[in-house]
Length: 187
Image (cartoon, rainbow, N blue to C red; front, side, top):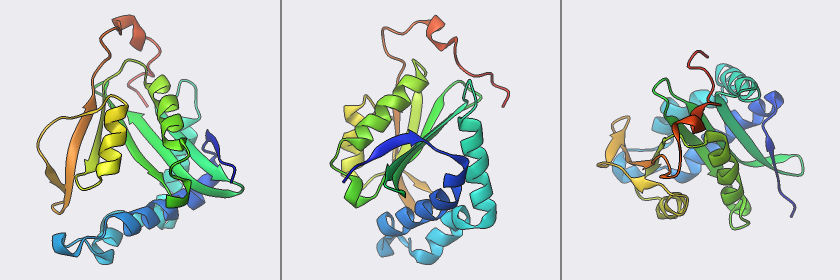
């Protein structure tokens, strides 16, 4: 199988919204925590609606500007999208990584690492933060391999989903001039 990582195209929004919901339904259902299909659809189902798809389209269009205050890469297998990694600058100068997903069949091919390499190059020396579901040990190991550390106590996202905050600090060899290419805080 051949996989290609590319910048997302605005037309990808029609696939990304439903794919995002599909990933949540596949990976985060937890009856013991009260996280069922209904709860997920309440908190993430909008990504697959016309409004959610329009928001994905806008996100992608902004990510394709130069300089880009947002980042969005997709993994293609033929005409099918099988993964994505997005992120954006916060007003504080910190970058938020997420969402990032690869379908099961696309895992184990180095695609996550390749997307992360592109993301880190885009981010430059800026500090980066993310939230990861605390039972997703594979994702935690992946992020640690890329310089992220757990940065606080577990919290419940939307009151139910056990999540760990992780951060990647500014690399020690980075200088203040390294953020000169950062997009303006006005977006």
